[in-house]
Image (tube, rainbow, N blue to C red; front, side, top):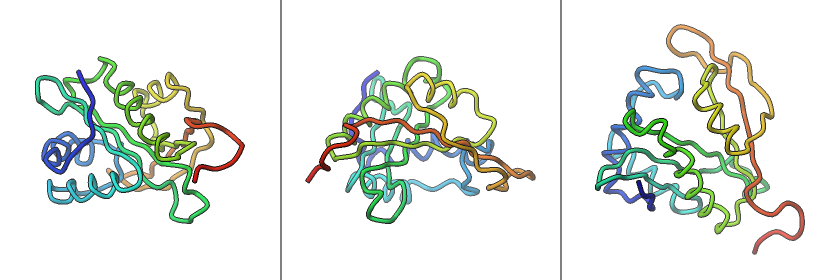
Length: 170
């Protein structure tokens, strides 16, 4: 499996991977899956300041990871919220780690120092991946999302990926 920067041409595959997370799980708090046009817009937006990468094997996109703004205020510009999604056929093969490694490399090059991820609870596969990659828990927001007939908690984790302290990048 290889990773590369996503392009608008990957939007349909990414939308297809993501849709079951939206419709059948509480992993995503979206209620309607985005179509390929919307996913293409998201890819372009992520590439402007952060990054979006895909994992592929034999030309087939099996997963993706992306970074975006942690918060809108300018002081947060060195932090990024990150997410990773894998097709069922790619789970358990190291693809999540591979995607995050490629994503973090790109984010560091753009001056990002800290990444954070929110995980709807329970989500053991995501918790294991993030812990294995050195993310540390920073807190849980209780009952912040309503999906599939119940209130959902979201646990946040974070990890340093760039140099701590010292002068900021230009």
